[in-house]
Image: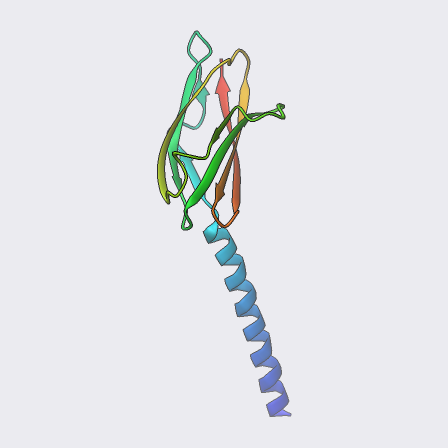
Length: 122
């Protein structure tokens, strides 16, 4: 009876460890982004430069910025962001006349994706 209990307990702990390691690995491999501001304020011409830092354990592949509600990307950066694991970015956003949310999709070369929203006020 003790041997059976020991094996059941051992299997439980092994299975738990594998599950926890796989979850933490998935989260750790996703790129992270920090913005220099919590939200933006466009100038009188409707322009704002969104800036910050992207970090990733796996080299970046691309950054795509889309204005929320649009199906066409506003900006695709698959050159300056590519192959970097620590990337300071600055992108000029134009045409801001109303509250505008940016959808920022960041991909690394393992195709892990992080999506964040950023608000720009007119």
